[in-house]
Amino acid sequence: MSREIDWTRLSIDADVTAVLTWVYETGGSRLTALYENAKAAQWNATTDIDWTIDLPYGSPLPDGSDLARRSFLSSPLGDRGRAGWDEFRWEVQGWTVSQFLHGEQAAMVASARLAELLPNIDAKYYAISQAGDEARHTEAFARYVDLQIPEPYPLSPALKALFTDALSASSWDITAIAIQSLVEPIALAGFRMAGSTFHDDLVKRIVAKIAQDEARHVSFGVLLLNEALRELTSAELASREEFVLEAVSLMRTRFLMAEVWERFGVPVSDGTAFAAVDPGLSAFRRTLFSRLVPMLAHIGLLTPRVVDGLTRMDLLDRAAVRTVRRVLEETGVSNR
Image (cartoon, rainbow, N blue to C red):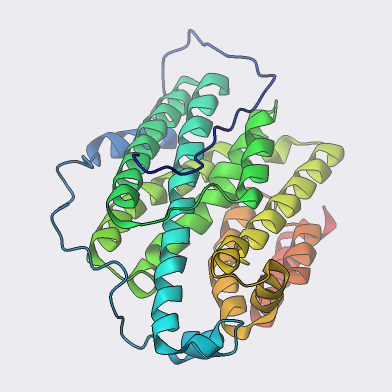
């Protein structure tokens, strides 16, 4: 990118052991089928996206939803009028896409790491195919950012901390939990909401393409971790629960949008305090994070401790909490 932006490099040290296997039979596993689907669904960011679409970034926008507009009017920016409402929405889109861009690169590195560490050849095949997907996503978002966003954002401190923890872990399942089971489902939820939260056709088409890949990546996480995590000792399970709660807390902090408030000249403490309790923004976070519930349930990490943590962070509404607790009781997880 040509702009003079503080795009700093993030170097993360990790003590990992590369694993090669001489057993090449895949056995027709579900991972093999997923890998075949990945090969058939490849697309080219250069030729399969129409980059000539008009780019109306910063132009006037429709009114938007009543809930979103009420949130803005009650925010520290509420006195800036209709022009401020449009500017804020464009800025949030720029911030969101910037974080998507950085997250896709982190997912690319994590997928390559998993290909290095996983013991089975079919898992290695899929992991490296996912690394290729993430490279394409990074390419597409980078091109969009360069074309469209006047002042992109660097990696948020919360995501930086999460990626550092995930990529410095010596156990492959920690890396997989972070990327496949936490980051990917929330990103997929964000991509699927793009039709109502993003404002130009180009980025909507990009995320629609990417969402097709991300759905496979979420499935990979389930297949990869379902059995592995059920073999954990009680102490190992407790450490994974702690990691999940710390990671979710970091991602929730990210969605308080500290960097956006700062760019608008709002004291960060005022902006994040508002975002933490505003009904509209709280509902948006709960919608995103609700996608974690089935994922964590599939891999055996939707434990009472994790549910309590999600509830304390206001990421599950009351109906969701009741449903989750009933599932835990019926499956016996509450006694684990």
